Length: 133
Image 1 (cartoon, rainbow, N blue to C red):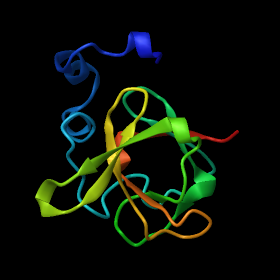
Image 2: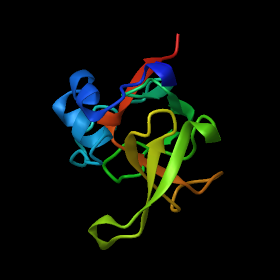
Image 3: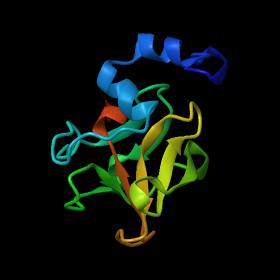
Image 4: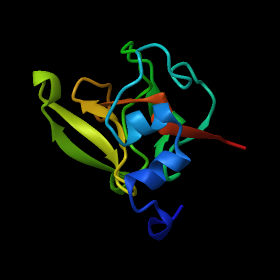
């Protein structure tokens, strides 16, 4: 989906996303830990934004953080995501947004493995997966 074809308002987003996807991607919700479909996915491929199909993460950067959400130590490219300070729930965190459609993906923390030291903690419902051929 190109930027010019993205929904123009929240009513349009509600029509293309399920209720759960809309709550996470557009309302900054989260799925319960250890319930996401991609948490234990070991297949090779690319993780895409559920809302706009922007390429976000490679399976090569996925690791088991024990947090209950799919975790990655890096993005496909630095332009794939955007960051925003998040002080909700009286916690200082950094929100991860799709840079294409500005949908909420999850949060990033500085307690990940090498080489980046980052842990992108991402909701499964904010992702699609394209298996490598």
